[in-house]
Length: 73
Ligand SMILES: [Zn+2]
Image 1 (cartoon, rainbow, N blue to C red):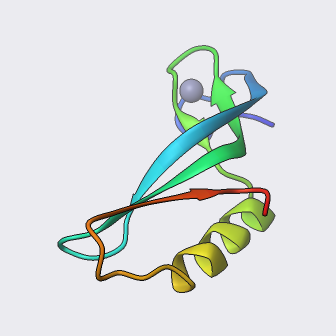
Image 2: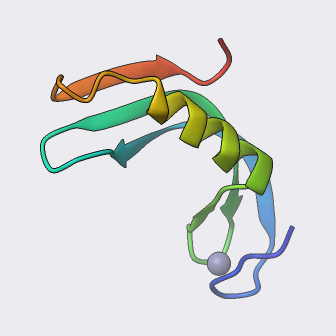
């Protein structure tokens, strides 16, 4: 897919990404499939992946400051 930021080429990579779920808690999702722009370095998340991320985040206990979750579980 094309980079939304600069229109450059992206390649598929698997990475860990942090998501802030409240003022005090962060969820790190490990081994997420994302696209990485070769020109500007931006990470782009596909809609189906984002939906899965949202459902993962919903299931996380936001009472903890840092939660690490595997994407593929
Ligand atoms: Zn870019």
